[in-house]
Length: 108
Image (tube, rainbow, N blue to C red; front, top):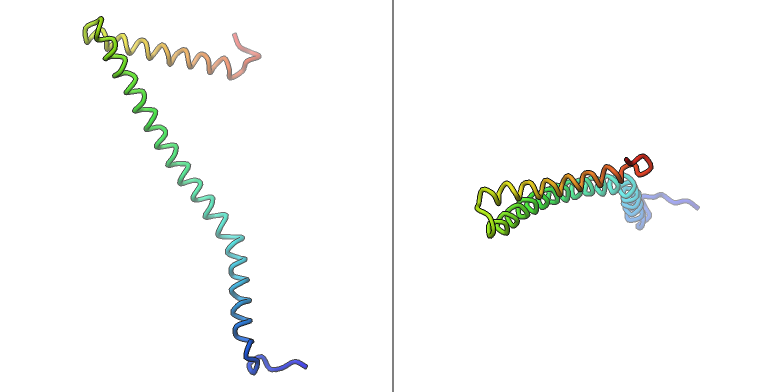
């Protein structure tokens, strides 16, 4: 026999538990994917920025190390332009390699 819900002592906790469960399920299906996507975008963008910074610092270090190495047999001005030519040549070879690998069937 149905009773009055207001006279049932377990009615309030049951309703509160039901509301909490429903709200939790809705949150899990809507908010969590958005939060995970936002975190992925933020951390991915941060990784790209830090990676680009590291590549730039590495290239600068490569130039400076090569200039210091080339200053033993040459003067400073010659070591500078020679390091530019050598590193530029390495970048050109890397670019040619990437272009050939881009479409190997149509390569040269």
